[in-house]
Length: 128
Image (cartoon, rainbow, N blue to C red; front, side, top):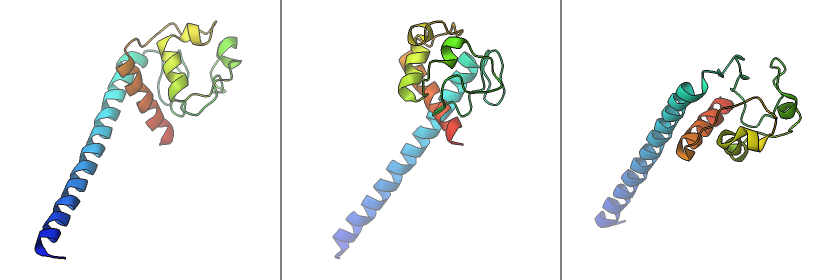
Protein backbone atom coordinates (compact mmCIF):
# COMPACT_ATOMS: atom_id res chain seq x y z
CA UNK A 1 0.00 0.00 0.00
CA UNK A 2 1.45 3.34 -0.97
CA UNK A 3 1.14 6.54 1.03
CA UNK A 4 -1.85 7.81 -0.99
CA UNK A 5 -3.75 4.54 -0.48
CA UNK A 6 -2.96 4.60 3.24
CA UNK A 7 -4.31 8.13 3.57
CA UNK A 8 -7.46 7.18 1.70
CA UNK A 9 -7.96 4.11 3.90
CA UNK A 10 -7.51 6.26 7.00
CA UNK A 11 -10.11 8.74 5.76
CA UNK A 12 -12.53 5.88 5.04
CA UNK A 13 -12.14 4.57 8.59
CA UNK A 14 -12.79 8.06 9.99
CA UNK A 15 -15.82 8.51 7.75
CA UNK A 16 -17.31 5.17 8.80
CA UNK A 17 -16.69 6.02 12.47
CA UNK A 18 -18.36 9.39 12.00
CA UNK A 19 -21.42 7.80 10.35
CA UNK A 20 -21.72 5.26 13.16
CA UNK A 21 -21.52 8.03 15.76
CA UNK A 22 -24.20 10.05 13.95
CA UNK A 23 -26.46 7.00 13.70
CA UNK A 24 -26.08 6.21 17.40
CA UNK A 25 -26.66 9.84 18.31
CA UNK A 26 -29.81 9.95 16.19
CA UNK A 27 -31.11 6.75 17.77
CA UNK A 28 -30.58 8.20 21.24
CA UNK A 29 -32.32 11.42 20.27
CA UNK A 30 -35.25 9.46 18.88
CA UNK A 31 -35.58 7.50 22.12
CA UNK A 32 -35.53 10.77 24.08
CA UNK A 33 -38.19 12.25 21.80
CA UNK A 34 -40.31 9.12 22.09
CA UNK A 35 -39.97 9.06 25.86
CA UNK A 36 -40.92 12.74 26.08
CA UNK A 37 -43.94 12.19 23.81
CA UNK A 38 -44.96 9.12 25.82
CA UNK A 39 -44.79 11.13 29.04
CA UNK A 40 -46.78 14.03 27.57
CA UNK A 41 -49.35 12.06 25.55
CA UNK A 42 -49.72 8.65 27.20
CA UNK A 43 -48.71 8.79 30.87
CA UNK A 44 -52.03 10.21 32.01
CA UNK A 45 -53.46 6.72 31.54
CA UNK A 46 -50.42 4.47 31.12
CA UNK A 47 -47.19 3.77 32.96
CA UNK A 48 -44.35 1.56 31.85
CA UNK A 49 -44.29 -0.80 34.85
CA UNK A 50 -47.69 -0.59 36.52
CA UNK A 51 -51.30 -0.57 35.48
CA UNK A 52 -53.19 2.71 35.68
CA UNK A 53 -56.38 3.52 33.81
CA UNK A 54 -54.66 1.67 30.95
CA UNK A 55 -52.36 -1.37 31.17
CA UNK A 56 -48.61 -1.18 31.75
CA UNK A 57 -46.76 -0.73 28.49
CA UNK A 58 -43.27 -2.12 29.08
CA UNK A 59 -43.23 -5.28 26.99
CA UNK A 60 -46.21 -4.27 24.85
CA UNK A 61 -44.22 -4.64 21.61
CA UNK A 62 -44.68 -8.27 20.58
CA UNK A 63 -47.37 -8.91 23.21
CA UNK A 64 -50.90 -10.13 22.43
CA UNK A 65 -53.66 -7.61 23.06
CA UNK A 66 -55.55 -8.03 26.31
CA UNK A 67 -52.94 -10.29 27.87
CA UNK A 68 -51.72 -8.45 30.99
CA UNK A 69 -53.42 -10.58 33.64
CA UNK A 70 -53.59 -7.79 36.23
CA UNK A 71 -55.52 -5.43 33.92
CA UNK A 72 -59.28 -5.51 33.30
CA UNK A 73 -59.55 -5.05 29.50
CA UNK A 74 -62.70 -4.51 27.48
CA UNK A 75 -64.05 -7.71 25.96
CA UNK A 76 -63.35 -6.24 22.52
CA UNK A 77 -59.63 -5.79 23.19
CA UNK A 78 -59.23 -9.03 25.11
CA UNK A 79 -60.77 -10.94 22.19
CA UNK A 80 -59.05 -9.01 19.38
CA UNK A 81 -55.98 -11.32 19.24
CA UNK A 82 -53.78 -8.48 17.98
CA UNK A 83 -50.00 -8.84 18.28
CA UNK A 84 -48.58 -5.39 18.96
CA UNK A 85 -45.88 -4.41 16.48
CA UNK A 86 -45.08 -1.21 14.55
CA UNK A 87 -47.98 -1.66 12.14
CA UNK A 88 -50.65 -2.61 14.66
CA UNK A 89 -49.55 0.04 17.15
CA UNK A 90 -49.65 2.65 14.39
CA UNK A 91 -53.19 1.65 13.41
CA UNK A 92 -54.22 1.55 17.09
CA UNK A 93 -52.81 4.97 17.95
CA UNK A 94 -54.25 6.48 14.77
CA UNK A 95 -57.82 5.45 15.63
CA UNK A 96 -58.35 2.87 18.39
CA UNK A 97 -62.12 2.62 17.81
CA UNK A 98 -61.71 2.00 14.09
CA UNK A 99 -59.01 -0.62 14.73
CA UNK A 100 -60.83 -2.51 17.53
CA UNK A 101 -64.48 -1.50 17.83
CA UNK A 102 -65.84 -1.43 21.36
CA UNK A 103 -62.53 -0.86 23.18
CA UNK A 104 -62.20 1.60 26.06
CA UNK A 105 -59.41 3.84 24.74
CA UNK A 106 -60.70 7.21 23.58
CA UNK A 107 -57.32 8.83 22.79
CA UNK A 108 -55.61 9.21 19.40
CA UNK A 109 -52.17 10.38 18.30
CA UNK A 110 -53.01 12.27 15.12
CA UNK A 111 -49.45 13.24 14.11
CA UNK A 112 -47.78 10.30 12.31
CA UNK A 113 -44.24 11.41 13.23
CA UNK A 114 -45.20 11.51 16.92
CA UNK A 115 -46.84 8.08 16.63
CA UNK A 116 -43.62 6.73 15.12
CA UNK A 117 -41.49 8.12 17.96
CA UNK A 118 -43.85 6.71 20.60
CA UNK A 119 -43.84 3.31 18.88
CA UNK A 120 -40.02 3.27 18.70
CA UNK A 121 -39.93 4.13 22.42
CA UNK A 122 -42.35 1.29 23.23
CA UNK A 123 -40.26 -1.07 21.13
CA UNK A 124 -37.12 0.00 23.01
CA UNK A 125 -38.89 -0.54 26.36
CA UNK A 126 -39.91 -4.01 25.26
CA UNK A 127 -36.37 -5.00 24.35
CA UNK A 128 -34.87 -3.95 27.72
